[in-house]
Length: 83
Image (cartoon, rainbow, N blue to C red):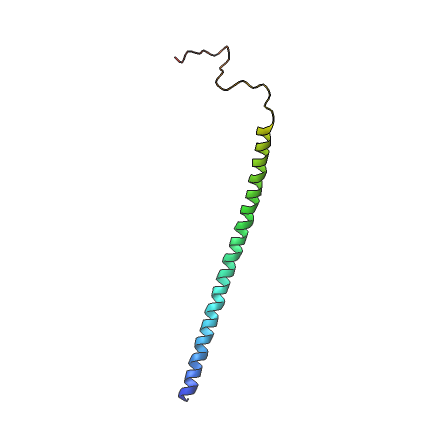
């Protein structure tokens, strides 16, 4: 076998190894992108739920609470003496 033929065989082998390695890296990265996509979907749903809940709470706060006594008024049946 000639030296030139041996060099070509080595180059082909190196290229095949590089292609195999690149293919495996693409598979790994593709799996990671799929996992990130799933996490993004879950987080997006949770964010939407949190926005809805916050909006609901803001509407409740904006409503007139009526005639509610302040929290510091204990009422006539509760002693004002701290001891």
